[in-house]
Length: 130
Image 1 (cartoon, rainbow, N blue to C red):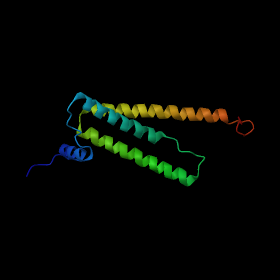
Image 2 (image 1 turned 180 degrees about the vertical axis):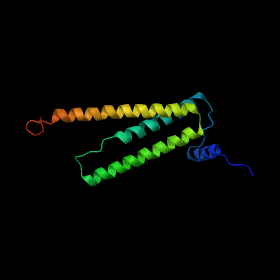
Image 3 (image 1 turned 60 degrees about the horizontal axis):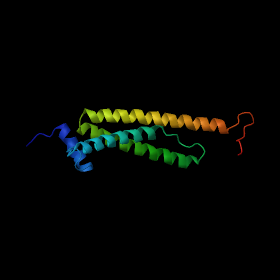
Image 4 (image 1 turned 120 degrees about the vertical axis):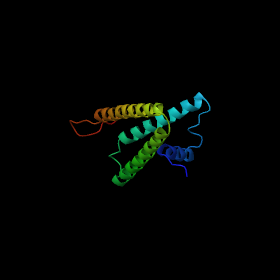
């Protein structure tokens, strides 16, 4: 009986999840796969830093936060499987995706805080009316 190695297990798992992934027919397929890993990690990092609304019903906010966390974990584990089954370039694409997602999420959070500080008048405790 043939030995079952760790890398062949992940290749088998990835082939079932994404048929045809590790076998690239052209450089475009390879580039598309890199882009997919980048977008997976970008979206996972953005979801992890996405602010949950404080003004809605607490149950709805908790459910939305749980759904975002589940989406983030799904995309992160899918990216991990893709990285384990391929080469170092996919790891670099994943790191770049996490860095870009963290940057965009931080800028988004900064924008939300700026808008809230402009709309809220601290001297009288009221919102500005337009």
